[in-house]
Image 1 (tube, rainbow, N blue to C red):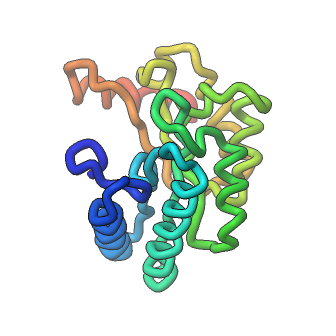
Image 2: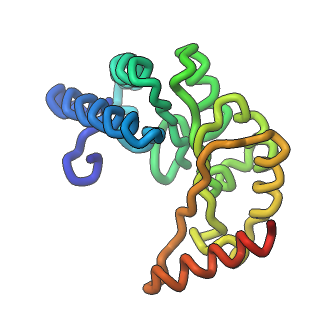
Length: 197
C-alpha cells in the first residue's frame, strides 16, 4: 500500500490519503471476519515540512478508521518503528502517549522486538513491554538482524518471560529473515521456541 501506491494518512495528495483510509477500512472488514488485528505501520505516513498539519491529517485519518474498527470490534495497532523507517511514533513511550489521546479501546500497540531494541533511550526492553502492557495487542518476535530467535544477540527469553509476567494473551508472530530456506528457517525457529517452554 505504502511502497507500491504511495498511500498514507499524511500523503501530500488528498486522493492518496482518502485511498489509504479506504483500504484500511477494507482491512478492518477483513480482520473482523478472521478475528485479527490491523497493524498501522508505515501507512500512518511521514511527517512533512508542516509537522502540525501532518499530525492533524494523521489524527483525522485515525478518527475515521477507528469509527469502523469500533463498529466491527476490531483492534487497530500502531507499530512504533525506529527513526531509520519513520519520523514519528518511533518509540513505545511516545506511541502509548499518542494512543492515550484517543481514549479508545479499539486502538492499541504492536511491539516489534527489533524496533524496541533500537529504542534503548528510556529503560530496558522488558520495561518497554511492561509500560505497554495495557495496550499491547500484538508482538513481532525475532533476534538481532531479524535472525531466528536464539541465533542473535537479543535476550529473547527475557522478552518472553516478561510477556508471561504481564499475562499477555495476544498474538506473537515471528518476523525473521528467510535466509534462502523458508522451511528450514521456520523449523529452526519452532525448535528454539519449543526448547524454552
